[in-house]
Length: 359
Image 1 (cartoon, rainbow, N blue to C red):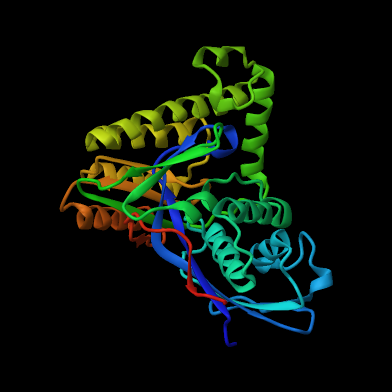
Image 2: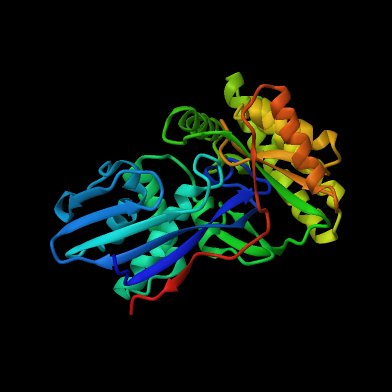
């Protein structure tokens, strides 16, 4: 196809603040150099056609058939078109996805945001970044049916190179935090694929909503530690313990980053992993092996990142120790009989952008 507009959007890792977006807490993600590209061209036959340069079937349907749940893997693309009400007389969309799938690095949000920016450039609608984020979240929540929060789409749209994005989901605001660590952020794709459509992820979210209702707080992250004693359900109490303690850790980690105390940053990352493993129960064998191996070979700190149940881990490594940590993790996986991990560039990068304008 001859594209009329091309856009790209980054994947992300979250430095700390996991499962806090839908709980009204704080998160501190960065955008990654790996990006997904989407090219969009108009059609005049009333059809929507989505294809990919990677493995995946071509999806085609009439614009009149565009409705939540339609499109299979292409639902993340079609959902954005649906949310923006931009199907028009038809579109062809070509995807080149370079964010690893199933790695917990937000390949779905990268796909959504690249689609949104490309479609907006094609139509000349001039939507704001906030409007595009909203469309991408609606695509994931309402069209695809994944009960995720808003962190991934927000950082993909608003990231700045060399910065982390501090997101306050209760207040609805954000600020850039310079992220230039003394050393290296090693991103470890464990190759343990995860999926966030319903299932375990949805159960965690419902438990948090029920705990917030019991405590009478609008957002669970706003609860005080002493309030958690009122939760009689032990599962809800563990979930709430993670949410409340993680919110405090985000604040501490931002302060440590701004002070250049990288050992303290690492300690807080490791504490976050323990909370996710023990209280929120979203880690897995591969993530735990990666974290343990990184810590045993000199990392300041390490943790799982993303929704969990697989995906990726991160390790903050002193200068010159990155290769040692990567090798140690690889050998630890082999010793455990696990498939070899992969490693992703952890440099803090920029936001979704137009590559070729539509008009």
